[in-house]
Length: 174
Image (tube, rainbow, N blue to C red; front, side, top):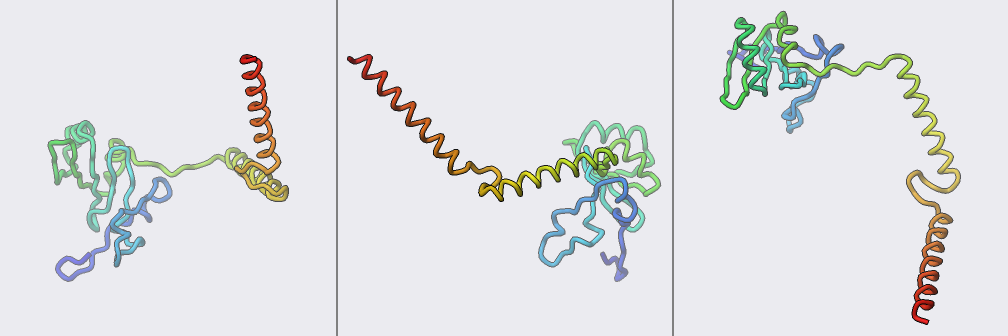
């Protein structure tokens, strides 16, 4: 972004917060001529909105909840408000030093972390499923499909039911 001919680089959310929080890319980054690697498009999704780079020195918190907006404004008057809406939305500007204060209210979505035991269980389950899939391919069937023999069994069962129904119907008439 250029201001008075000077290129301003925003605070890079990926560099600062990627280890702990999820980093999303704003949908406008996918427009022609834009780049997904541009730090202006990085966001931290939150339960009550999202956090984004506002400038080279400040971050913004787009708040979608009236209750959170009111509490944050009352408890921390040092955090600047730029937009205030009657429908509960607001935009707060803050420095990276104030991130933890805003995070208490915004509830940023954390990166998922697995314990080593959970990771081993998932790998084992995936390996077992892959073995079953490969075995089904070797047997001539694909996962999620019924084999030809099974299809014929179902058809013969249906025909047997029809025959029994017709036989019973003729007994009642006779």
